[in-house]
Image 1 (cartoon, rainbow, N blue to C red):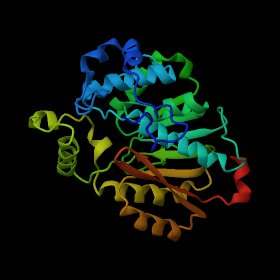
Image 2: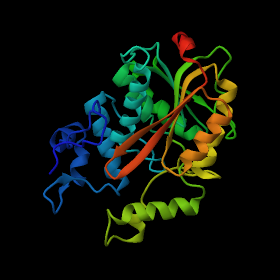
Image 3: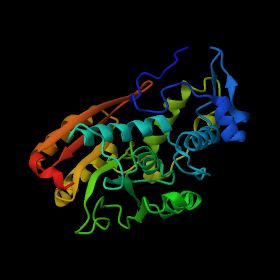
Image 4: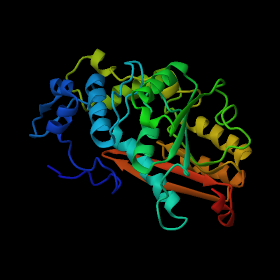
Amino acid sequence: MSTEKSSLHTRNLHRNPYDFDRLISCVPELKHYVFVNIHGTTTINFSIPEAVKLLNKALLFHFYNVKDWDIPDTNLCPPIPGRADYVHYIADLLAEKNGEIPTGTSVKGLDVGVGANLVYPLIAHKSYGWKMLGTDINEDSLKNAQYILDQNPDLSSSIELKHQPDSKYIFKNILNPEDRFTFSMCNPPFHDSKESMIKGNLRKTKNLNKGKDRKTLLNFGGQQSELWCEGGELKFITNVINESVQYSSQILWFTCLVSKKDNLYKLTTLLKKVKAVEVKTIDMAQGQKISRILVWTFIPQQNRKSF
């Protein structure tokens, strides 16, 4: 058995195999879902949302001291290691300015589509002390994210939430003229329809659940706004890019996760068209899943010190 998840970022706290004894001590209910598989590995069934939710709760408490994390069954339950990778690669991006990762609340990040889970702001602040703003179009998701903050009063001055009242917009209604952010981040909806989402989840779970029934295969949580939108990932990120032009002086680095490699050419072509002064693609891998972070800025190198 591999002793390290070598594909994860070198600063990722989740590179080593899960210590389930320690995690169960953090969240005792997790023990009901832990078993030893045919390869002799202690694990959980990752297609069972409750198991993944309890694992996340334990990981966030053990590694980040986040208390009483929880999400409704209807919301997306994200894999913590992959979410942490995105944050660490942003830290590397910010370190390019002077060779050191900037820490503390002078670094301000904007999480577009924070969801009910609040995971990106939690990891970003707990890892680097950054100040974070999370936005979402779903008010119920924001209520749950606020619940998590209420259970962790030490975060109240470092993580804020804001409702986006119009799903057509990304930054409009969120940014005031005086606002400045060091970076924005976004994990866009992947699918272009509910049908596409269901088919994708069926494919995803078949390898985990050979022989299980259809009900189990459909047992992935997620609100519509978290999983699909008209036009899918390509349309969503296209909207982010087009709107980023209007806020080009207010955010130093715009970033988006891109799951479909085929979308990169169209997106980078658009970024050239809108005259982004620097565009990068950062590769990430978590197990069998490969994704990329698309990064762009409109601010020339010599003007970046103000951020």
